Amino acid sequence: MASNGNGGGHHGDSEVKTDIITLTRFLTEEQHRLGPHATGDFTLLCHALQFSFKSIAYYIRRATLINLIGLAGSSNMTGDDQKKLDVIGNEIFVNTMRGCGKVKVLVSEEEEEAIIFPGHGKYAVVCDPIDGSSNLDAGVSVGTIFGIFKLDDGAEGKAEDMLKPGTELVASGFTMYGASANLVLTMKGGSVNGFTLDTALGEFILTHPDMRIPKSKGIYSVNEGNSLYWTEPCKAYFESIKYPQEPGSKPYSARYIGSMVADAYRTLCYGGLFAYPADKKSPKGKLRILYECAPMAMVMENAGGLAVTSDQRRMLEVVPEHIHDRSGIFMGSYDEVTKVTDVFKKHGVVAK
Ligand code: AFP
Image 1 (cartoon, helix red, strand yellow):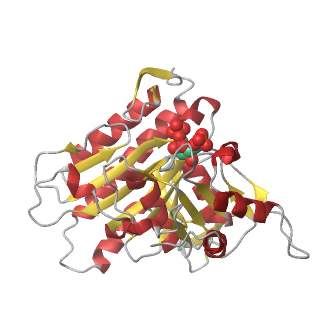
Image 2 (tube, protein in one colour):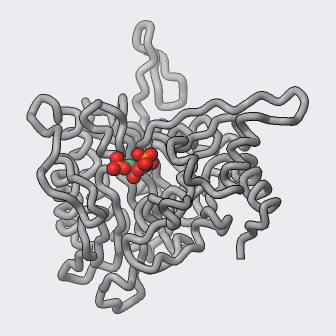
Image 3 (cartoon, helix red, strand yellow):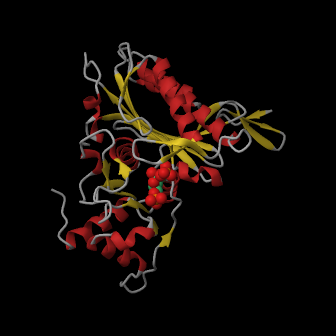
């Protein structure tokens, strides 16, 4: 066997990588990079997170076979019917976060109130355990979105601790359960890294190091069924990309899955714009600030993109009024979000 000097070797026709970076190794290296004052608590919390992603991925993959599709017969705090997998995903998440001993406060889309765990955990976690679950029975990609805050020293842990802007997140990301389970993770001021679950090894493998969102791309992703309710600047922006007036320019392509994690992952990989605007029917938009908008905005910004609200404020600076508060959002490639802001500005909407 000949080594290629890069941790791989030639075995017959195929090259087998023998020096792979697992999420476990990645987290250990990150901890060492921080030096001796790093306690390892954050690393342990991330290990618990990755276990919950693996478990949820396992149940989603087997859902049709073991009668996990369909409704659970209950609804969550926002009035959505809960799927059986919503309930299971939430239980997995709550139990792994409790079990790791490092989390004090947990906010989940599926729980009306914040959960306060006993013990001295110094982190607060926000999550949507299975986002896009209305797509589940059709086998369409769904995902888990998460964000991690560090609590102030001695904080006793209460729901109000979570009413912070996304700029205070220490880490965030999501796992998309699609053809494979893809985990995207970013830490404050850091790069964005993508891992793919190798189901045979049971490990997330670093497959997309230092992800950068393309600066521009003619793809838009929005539920056009809401266009009747859109505000004038919103209508004007989408008109401008569908019926471009500049000579030689082409209309954008439309892509909308209806599962934020899948739409965001595609936008991160290919570039373009994802939007769920506030409108006349839903003046605060649909998506939740704490566990949908802010974590995604952090990923987009750390990958070189942008994320703004419907009133064109930086998404990461928005402070939710309550744990399930909502916002309109436009996010994606730097140039595409800038175009949105420019059109809104022409209509007098300028961030305050
Ligand atoms: P569900 O979890 O009820 O499927 O909602 C998914 C979601 O929160 C988000 O993932 C999508 O981007 C958005 O809602 C889709 O909403 P519309 O069905 O109104 O387009």
